[in-house]
Image (cartoon, rainbow, N blue to C red):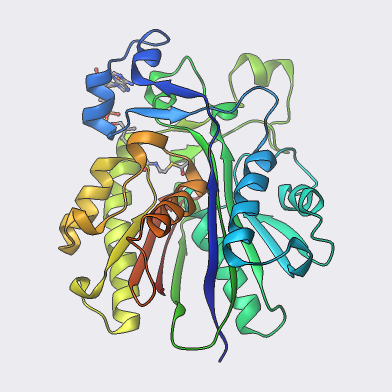
Length: 326
Ligand code: ACO
């Protein structure tokens, strides 16, 4: 069977930095609380006129350059996002036009923080089936636009950014070796945005009730996340006949440093094998894994032949892992 591999990576974050000290002036919080409970020190925030497609476009250009490919060669573009530019068309269609990727079909995937792994798995299967030869997979978010800046429980957590990978057929045993995806819609109310869709379309009431912002029961989500991540990582290890010690680098979704550390500890993986970016970017939902991958590829921590494990948990609820031999 054809296996797909990552040919190039790219990422982009807006220049504007919002520090914990800035947040201390906005809500009743402290740098100490945020660092101790989340590991976040600062996050990037997009300007008013910047949308998710703008960040995705910048990340995509870098990934195409790294892959040595032209946009016109792309067959498929998938964007994972919970902050699309608009209800429709899909943000992937907007990026297809910006890139001039005329031949590519394009669509979005909504799986919150697990979105990038869901999108990567979908693109991988299109290539495995032989339908398409290559794909651009992007995680792009402007969470600052759906953050309630008066709610200290959530506003300290999120940031904006985008990461992208180009995938194509692998000529050897390197590539995406497995993906395990899970959903539990029964617990969807732990983390959601009630307003803006067909259930609660925008009205004066929905705006007054702050229904267009993220609602999260963080503590309950935390406990479920740690358990689910351990299970889904073990699924990846079992499916590939690997032990935790065979993993060279883990790229986790960056929701909370304590979740990342607890998961690594349960699996017996030392933290020097885990890519951490949450201190500088906060939780960028679907963008966090591809941003972290790009950083680790560029500084050499991820290199050919290494076993790289991706893991994520988020709204849906949804959770996932993927094992890549780089
Ligand atoms: N500053 C100061 N105090 C705060 C803040 C803040 N920013 N936020 C909450 N507190 C207070 C609370 O009010 C509470 O006070 P109380 O005890 O007087 O009621 C206290 O701190 C503890 O609150 P908890 O919610 O229990 O704090 P916790 O240690 O659980 O940390 C956090 C909260 C950081 C949200 C954590 O639960 C978490 O990271 N959860 C998981 C998030 C996650 O993984 N989400 C999925 C991915 S996101 C996605 O899919 C979009």
